[in-house]
Length: 290
Image (cartoon, rainbow, N blue to C red):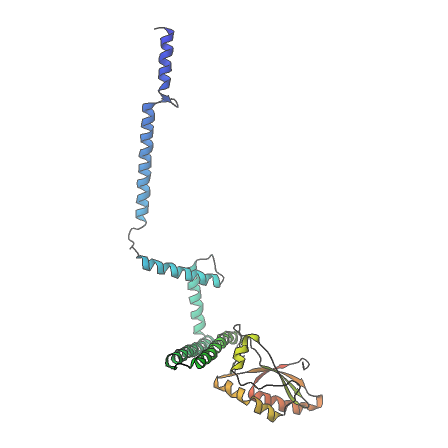
């Protein structure tokens, strides 16, 4: 065979190679890879099926409710500052805490008082529905007035509930009637500043813009800070307001300042008892503001 014929055969042989493999070898390699992929898919499918062994299927409606419940629990966890921790553990801890508090004497009393306020809120809602159902056409103003009064009452009760928590923490304090005006954080809104002086009792109303509509529903006397009232006039002017607080099972609070002279302590004590007849008070050591 000549050298030319050998070179021609080598060239033909190289045309049938891919990466140094013959076409037959490449075909066998592809088939092997496909078999590996098929085997891997079978293993993956078996693992997926094993996850559902001994488990029941959940219908779509039930699954949606479970997702909703999980979202609510997560929201609760966020509110109590436990985001990122297991929600189930947070909830178990919260339940244990509530049970421990409920077993204590003070905790049971606070829960009892809280339940009473919630019952009052439900009763307020029932009254609103009753008025809306039975009221005749044309009584829209009465319905609106009743709803407004009840809404203010419910808003105040939210603050009263918060105050019960404060009372529970400060054992032995906070006894007496509920304050009528309480913020949602439990702080009291005082109705008047009252100055006890040599010439009589002077009053100045404290203004709360957020209570403007609620203020209109109260029989509050119009007062002039420059007008000194005798004890009899003070009692007569504030009696309707006092009676409204009795009906609501609460008491309005005022801030009291001492404007009497050093030798007038008997007068101061007499005026203070008069104020205490219709209001709860907070004594201020500051100088009278008016």
